[in-house]
Length: 414
Image (cartoon, rainbow, N blue to C red; front, side, top):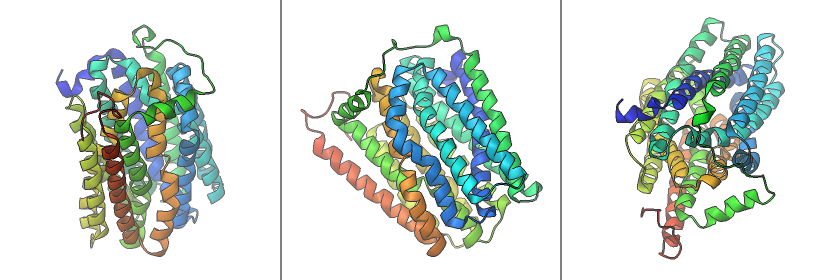
């Protein structure tokens, strides 16, 4: 097996990857359908911002405790329970949309509940990869896991856009797509049940303590390298991960396109998004300078996309946005998984996710408002400036702390 696919030689990881891929296709289908549903029920740009903010808000609030939970309970159990909850909420929303009973407030409430389930599930799911493979396969497994997520994006948004258009482009059409996502959780849960638990690299069980979250924070205070990752992730999350909102507004408001073209944009972004994890999988360990370069390039590409004069030119820029954004995100994820102490991995991962995805609610309403009232081009430009500021802040803090007495031995120079 080629080095870039080496982790797939592990039976447990192979089963886990297949189930996760099917579920991820459904996740991207729902993401596209959700954005279109909000527009159909009269939410507009502000409604899109509110929906994404409410789905991400639990990550911001609950992540530290979810990470402590992942470090104290069997990760597989946490994942299965959380995914069952998310499947239930997806099914409820799908039924409401199909029957014509979905209003903006129902969509927003279920996005919040769905977000609670995801906030609990994500730290356990990301750190669970370390139990599936040996340490020398960790970078490859984490990168392939991310590649699977983005490969599914090649399929999900396009399929969702086509289905919504074929079913009439209304709210009811989005409901069937959301119900399909609820069904795909069965593949992920089934793959977890099929794993050979004898081959898992489990850490010794440890009781949950009231100071577990504080231990994670104190650990990060001694790690300038991880602080750099978290700072960049926060700014990219707040100013860059809202690209879906802005892309929807660019398609509809700026270029006057429909569901089909909006879905195509999602697929085009996935083409670039997939390249980032694949490139990361080829390297034994990402260097910190690669994170900085990726975040800087992402900001630059966003600024260029804000200037795109036509839909075809904008569509051509979208893969570059995906490439730079998810080269950063995948490298950051791998860095956290590799560098964090195994006993702290769940908590460090949860704080990383809080920084990357938990920051999205802070920016989503702002950019939704700017996009609706000043135009999506201005919102994209503001997003690019915010990411650039994050690079400056993160690098300044890192360079200030990297003296011999402050930095751990395994953290390489920037």
